[in-house]
Length: 337
Image (tube, rainbow, N blue to C red; front, side, top):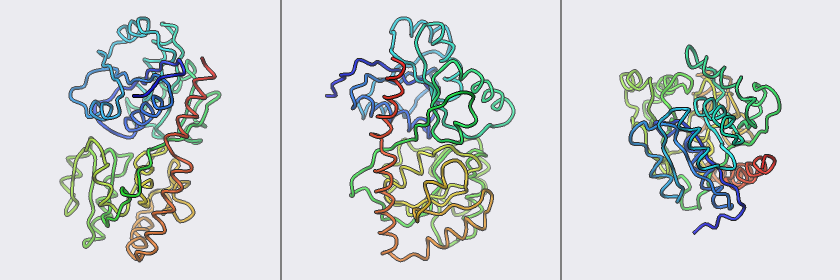
């Protein structure tokens, strides 16, 4: 049993209906905080029905509470429980959480994960999220996102658990892992798959573009949303991230922790992750360049792939472990409380 020793009680607040990068981050952070002695729990702002995050948190012995989506309910819950800190993730949890924290007298930390402004109503919410960010201590997952926020922002890059050697990939499939939405570029992945008819391409994820993507998927294997990628990574040899906007994608870190290289457009922090032979990064929108990266990966012999796997795992262990992320987040908390 984890002994919670440092006296901090932290709520990790998010509004979520499915598993994505933010949810994966929150699960890893909450479990890591509890292992470090911080009494952390997840609070879901609203009930959106059955959610795989409950099983993921239960596996890691992390408590979770679900509210009804109303600001007044969140304020009452904060006044009743009096956590040391409310830590928000995502624009809706951020906007409502910062207001509720101010009313209830609970300090707020907000992590900004997404490098995409969106369009229409989403763009309006994103703008409001940035404006109200001054009501919280701000954290960003990379320097690009930090630079778009007003005032002082602390950069804490994402971290992931690094599994043992038995979990290292030995597969040869090409995969897309992410939300099926415009900013993630699933349509570009389908275009790439058509250029490699003899290669196995697979997609993991769900989202608003799913119908259109499935209609044109051809030979691409569609898995939909999966609760966890743990049992799938071993079969994957290359992760392709044709994103139009990114922060610091958890999927890329999870793949690299298992030795899998990443081929991506140069958005967010992907150039930093893939440099020094850990993968390939090409100019945003350069589909031919991404196809050339897949060709280069396909041409590698097993010795080259084994060397890259070891290099990638060591890099994630040294720079992007959960333990490193938790130390830096606890330091942010310590400056507040």
